[in-house]
Length: 113
Length: 116
Image (cartoon, rainbow over all chains, first blue to last red; front, side, top):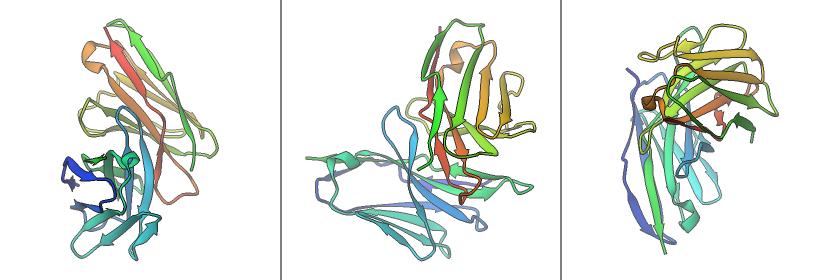
């Protein structure tokens, strides 16, 4: 059974803080990894893909550690608008070349003024 | 990013009726679309994978005769909740994968279904 695990939080941090989330996955054959952001009662929105070499987009940095089977998301200089639930997603081949995303349950972040 | 629309955004129906939800990829083609359900404060649960021109693949525990999926074109998939019951009340979200993409999925805005 393919599993994706995240600390549910909540993470309550002050504005300007740096916060990091980790996500572990069970399938060593997983190929693609993503972070999504979901606001309350809204759909998930793709935040960034996660590449083996690590990637950065403004205040957000994502990293992949294949050996330990985890991905991370670092948010620097937190803004109030960063408050949301962050979902990690792992892409797996469900058979016959059909790929599905398996989502973690999400980590809730609250940035406090 | 790619745009996926979903209609209706909110629907209230009586127990025993059927509800159809449409999912469209607006600016890209999607051979594969996915249907998820999310209960309040719970995680996304994949219901089925919808493949253009073929039968959908349902996850374990999801009744294919109750949740009818049709993916007639590269830009449209529909989910019909048949004989809806109050326990079917949930947030239904579709997603689509860009043919030219790297397996990322783009989500529609979701449909909030309330069955009374």
